[in-house]
Length: 256
Image 1 (cartoon, rainbow, N blue to C red):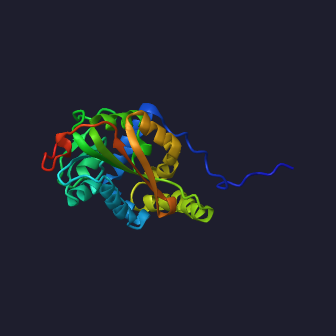
Image 2 (cartoon, rainbow, N blue to C red):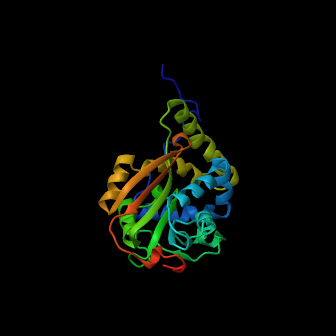
Image 3 (cartoon, helix red, strand yellow):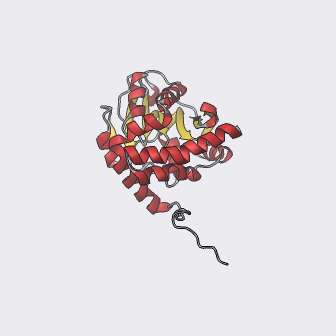
């Protein structure tokens, strides 16, 4: 006898994650949509820890006051505000017009693709990026572009999601990230966008691959630190080379 499957017992198959121009278009549209309540959802789903992690990421740059710092995928301005609090001269770049419209940091903002930054070579002392690496269509090209705009000795500080290595914590993290976060997003913002969020982790390279990518485009001293048992990660590195630049001079200005 053949068993009939009851309706609703099985979830429909998920569509494959987009690549290339399809991914770029999706990411731009998605962030335009979620911009108005982006900060609220971030605070709820991280219990406010994202604020502390950004503060730590800014400190990890180790730059003197007044240094020019480019915040890539700046969103609504959390990193920009923290950089200013720590004495930096920040400039924000984002692909999403919606995010830039919701940005209330008061800092200079530019709409641009991270693979083609409208910034002179060697003109900034630091680059930050918060939870956006997995949303980039061509990560290798973006890392090379960061190396281009940084002065020799310049620093990057990149925050991204991760997964704990300790099995019990990893299980709890997966349940929260794949079940609770989409539900929170659906209630407070956009359901489809926050279903995509946990799936987008598949775009991230592993630690060894990311380290190799950074070294290959001109970074040294690559360091990865786990945050909250591995739920998040902070990656820092230094632009190889020697020399001086106005980018690292206190009071050098606020624009690239």
